[in-house]
Length: 166
Image (cartoon, rainbow, N blue to C red; front, top):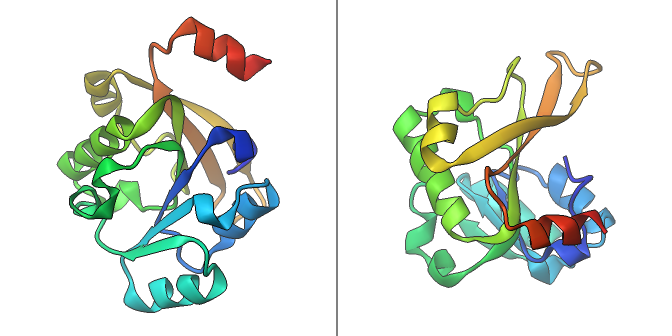
């Protein structure tokens, strides 16, 4: 889930961190706690996350409302999501991705964990927002099998793409 993310990526927004499994993996990748913003809906999980990661910004909020909070002026290098997109209404998924990509740096990507057999974002939504998805990881050891998709802008400035490859 976190293999493409490093300290050089910039601040990371994590959606639906739960108990912090991906958060811990991000820290192991060199992301500073102070560069993490964790948005968790469940109050108990948010309190647990604040205890475990005291230097991270933890917001107990609904992701549909998060851009109306202190995040309204924030920009991120990556978004890591464990949200159950397959269970969300298509309009909510569209609005979520639109908001995230409005607050992502030009080279930024949205990383989505899923148990579904394909990208959990419908092709129509990706197309309407100028996005593409690519499966970048999967494991059969999970029951059911799990996959990670990178969702990014269809057209990124070439200079930034070349810079990422270096």
